[in-house]
Amino acid sequence: CWRDEMTDQEKAKIDAMSYEALLRAWRFAPVGDPRFQGEHGQYWSRRMAEKRNVEEDHGVGASKRLGW
Image 1 (cartoon, rainbow, N blue to C red):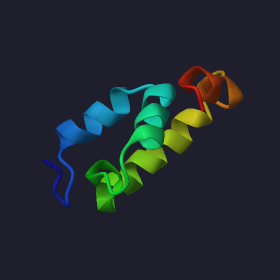
Image 2: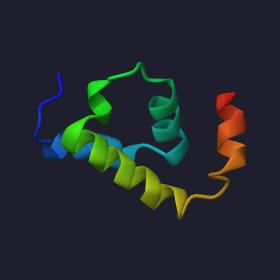
Image 3: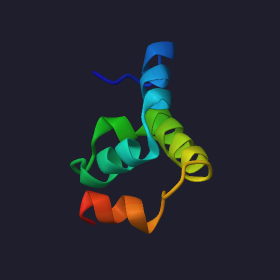
Image 4: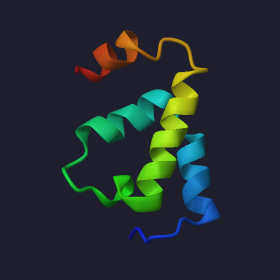
């Protein structure tokens, strides 16, 4: 269950995910998913942006593989 403040374990789990895995969860989560609310959502969004800027084939290729 997600709380307002993130634990180091929650951050580590997000950090270990690839850009594509983060994007898949972001795009296909139900509206209001708590992973993307408050501090969790801000951290998730920030890590996606950081990974998007360093991982190869992050744009159209990632979207196509997700079926988007």
